[in-house]
Image (cartoon, rainbow, N blue to C red; front, side, top):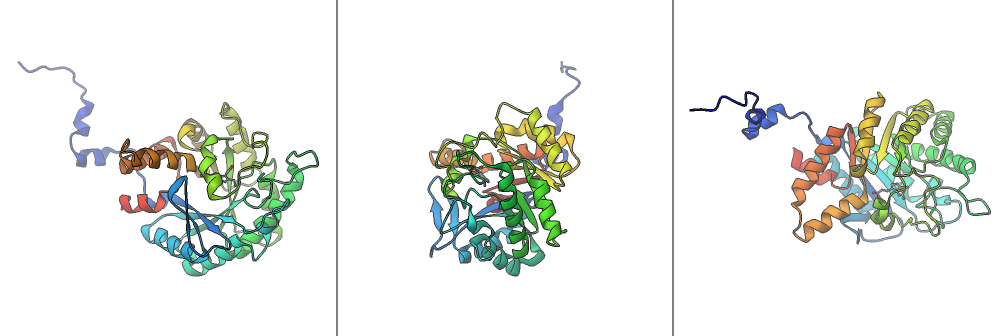
Amino acid sequence: MTARFPLARPRRLRATPAMRRLVAETRVRPENLILPMFVKEGIDEPQEIGSMPGVYQHTRDSLRKSAEEAVEAGVGGIMLFGVPAAKDERGSAADDPDGIVQSALRDLAADLGDATVLMTDLCLDEYTSHGHCGLLTDTGDVDNDATLERYASVAVAQAEAGAAVVAPSGMMDGQVAAIRAALDGAGHTGVAILAYAAKYASAFYGPFRDAAECAPQFGDRSTYQQDPANAREALREVELDLAEGADMVMVKPGLAYLDVVARVAEAVTVPVSAYQVSGEYAMVEAAARNGWLERERVILETLTCYRRAGAAQILTYWATEAARMLR
Ligand code: PBG
């Protein structure tokens, strides 16, 4: 005799790939992905980052080529980071019109035009000799308000070089308002701000600090980045950034913070993005190299989970490769 129970059989909707595709609640599209890229001043050949195999510090030329490949693969945007040849206390290269990011942005704007969204990380840590995200006081603290003036100037330099979106990542109080005022004052009312609103003081940024050569020379970032223990505080940071004029907000890192992504996505009506950071990339690449994980499946699974949690966009070093897999 055939069993008549259970009546509810969710497995019916999992029976075939076509059925699973039909009922999937979450989709990842290439245009949801943003590729972070590094361009370094004064090198002749692209340099692979030891702790991020497959990710490069680019020359201006190799950046152009790689950016074009990303756009061809269908990625939604590019987030550019610069590594200057010389650093100083103030991070002077950050707002130099001929600084590396500004030069590279002009290249990409000329090559790619409206085919993608050009974004720039807006911070000082890649440019300061001490590696902190802002200016220091005599006692070595990060001086919030003096830093805002630097960010304002960097924002204008990036906008002038062709950034469509600037993305302040330094976690200074009032940074979005200062940047918005500076952009508007310089006539760049159309340049959007993607605020790294909820950015945690995370050990998952380790490999990035090799890539951007920006490890703090003393101390850490826990007086400005958020404590991993706090989720409600992220909502407060997001609220403040929106009140100051942020057009989009980001949560970072992503994977270990998907609860924060979900809460932020529920709380706001602007697009919420999440950053799959360098440490997440490095963990998967390292495990895959050892044959301990199925690399492609893990990449697609994590991206799906980011979307499921509510991320509209995902910054990921796998953007080009994942976009190709998803087409
Ligand atoms: C700061 C910045 C960092 C990252 C993006 N922007 C490093 C930090 O805050 O120490 C980390 C990105 C990653 O780990 O992939 N400009």
